[in-house]
Image (cartoon, rainbow, N blue to C red; front, side):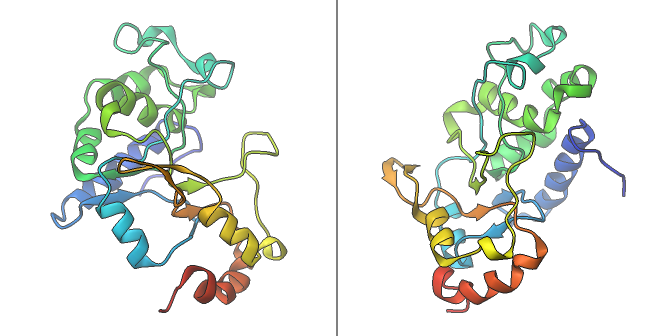
Length: 217
């Protein structure tokens, strides 16, 4: 057991160790990293089918100008990583076994992050998005499966308390967006998980889960 710090490169080390241990079980074909504040938006069978049948990985990755995007790039990473290749995204990922093996065995890009992505770089928001974009962009959907609300601004997404959990709110997260899935450019299931939900919201989530998310059926 080792302590990790938010935004520190040791977050990536921890993620790589989690993947390495999960890869030891040959039956594991899909790997999902979630926060303790995440909830599922669909029942297990729906989530499993969506993941196991997907032809893509789900790692959020995009080019972002400004101080919290390209502004975090360290020029000492060049020429292996150029500023044009620098990407930002969420640390909450979903990937297949092939990509998980590549992440664990990466000896080129991770050492660069460990050496040069410090202080206000926030490696957990840049390593996977950059690595996947450079090496495996054609296999990536460039989106996360975890719904978050960034509309309030700031370094953290919105938190949801008990009274904010309603059937309408859950349904909006489940089917209120449009995205591409396995060649269908207009699917309405874009997110399988959502965050950040505070612990005291659990009772209302459990109350709505059987009807809204078909849990227990």
